[in-house]
Image 1 (cartoon, rainbow over the protein chains, first blue to last red):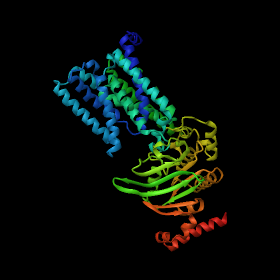
Image 2 (image 1 turned 90 degrees about the vertical axis):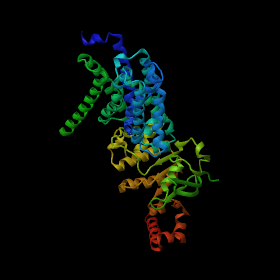
Image 3 (image 1 turned 120 degrees about the horizontal axis):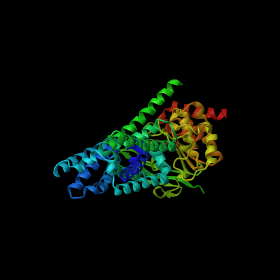
Length: 275
Length: 247
């Protein structure tokens, strides 16, 4: 069977669209998070998602809706990170570490209480985009539009907060509101991205495309566009490659992201030596 | 009748229960040029950050353009040039053009071009801010502070580590804005000689207000002699006389 024919299957089309929507959302949010040195928030929130999914499965939610049910808890955790950094004089990385370790600890306890790591919970650990359901596609679509609207409407404020939060405040930007929305959307994007990459790799979707784009020394808007480009390219290439060589799709997508980063770094070095 | 653009009453702010400013009160009228001076750690930047709402009000009150600070919405009337950007990442992907439009809902290409020309940085408009020298970055930030023709501009130690050429541009521009356009200016600096040359009023701060008045009054002040020593105060005031004469 030709690779192109695979895309005739409904489940593959659904996986591709879901993956593309989530990848775009993560790559846009990632630009702001990376520049604000909050890159590891994806990792932290993924760990919280693990704990939350384990908790909602334990209390009897269908594994089918576990991620959706876990969403409010993950959103609350993102606000906890913000609150910790703001009021308790804890640095962002330490706040992420605290919430992350509490999340994973709760996950381990919940999993143990529910009789060990069943197949449903393991699917969140490693992700499987090919099993994306119609509900997950719709959820990804909603998150995608929310991210686009957020950036479109609050772009001047987002730019100012990312550049310098104190400057932004002096311009009357409601930095608190911007931070809260950014973190809530990141929480939603992380929960939906679990399907692609799983807990282990979800932060890669938030970090690698923006970091690759940042190497190109472009303006802010062009950096966002480049981040989206690398992210989409990784999802499409990763899916095709994983079909062709029968590899796990999530891991392959992340490896493609890393390959693009290394290629850009190498190209920069070559160009620099030629000057 | 003079209009109070800034009214600070009994402002107290502490970091971890250590007071940075204590019981500060002063008024700033439209068209004024106020110099705020004081030693390191005297609370100058804390005061400015309180006025701008960067730090929350803990005690006392601040009125801006006649309104309590928490009700004030016209932040476009205030320009701000910080001492340094708190966390400028050298890899920040913002072009100079984008920095000038930062936080603005309405863009005005003509005005952007004007301030770029005024600061002599038109050729940098598509360059990334992180690629520029410190002096060029400060010129960009000064251009940003001028966008929207603010009625009040606050400069927080703006010439620290600037090259002499940029420093001269900065001071002549601030004087021009004040005298020609009637822009109200607050200049925070270590350099009391500079205050004497440009500012009409002086606020000497060391956690609380130790002196307020004109530079001439400052030179005659017996209290200040206690702080600077008779010789130093004489030199500061004499320098100013010399500058005036050469003008």
